[in-house]
Length: 356
Image 1 (cartoon, rainbow, N blue to C red):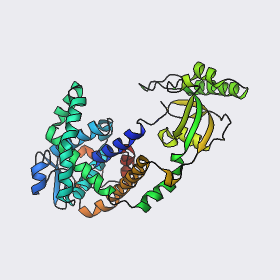
Image 2: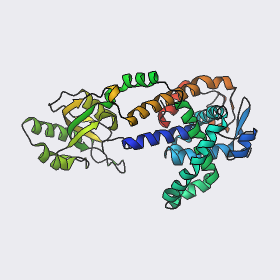
Image 3: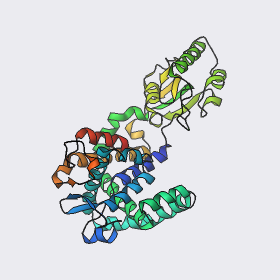
Image 4: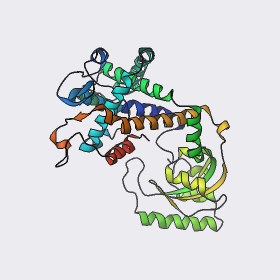
């Protein structure tokens, strides 16, 4: 329960899809775009930029892909005009990046796109009627899915190829606590249902119970008995609340920070997270030197650097493309034109989409 939404392996896969979903290519009049981009040239033009344009049909297909494969809350924040405009700007930026990549790299990934789609069809479309309806409503078919997968994967690989060993080491140095290997016991007094998000108990009630648990532990109480009695973390309550030899980065931020900073061998004050209150005791904490990182850790660091570099392109170089946005009037604030988006808007969108 305390982990972020993904296992370690899945984190890397989701990061890949995250970048895929952010870096989609669209339509235009070039030979390559006209031959492959879903929705190319169809519908109202909603954006123009140097040597290209985006139509409403094209963007709808992209946002459908984005919502299905990257962020299921996409519909919610795409309903916010400024955020939708920023996603459109990101989309344009990555169309430009894709156009600069050589065809050999593109052809290699195209060969993989079929396998990606087949797996998605078997485990997704064929089993979920609502998912199929969403794809149909957005006009996103097999060829469109393969196209976006190809475009976005190619861009991700291209950006990762530009990351140096020095870049990776620098990223490690700034996040090295994430790689600490920690054994920690905890008892969770929940405030929300982890499945539905519904309130389970008031914050003050949870804190009161957590303090009572801490008092019992401080008085010599047995972790196994108390975890079984009080803890609402199904992943550890039957094991005395123990998470053993875990990398810190897998846990939610507040729990991770406490596990990294709390005095070893001492029951700390209750720690609040999105799940509720945690009563914690760190049993051991071992740093992982850079030269002892696993291959998947190095890959994750490389992807983080690549994501940051791509975001720099979106936020810094987009101004050079002479972008003009013509979304419906509702997409503007009173007195503002559609071709202006603040840096704060960009930051909000980046936070929601998961880029750094």
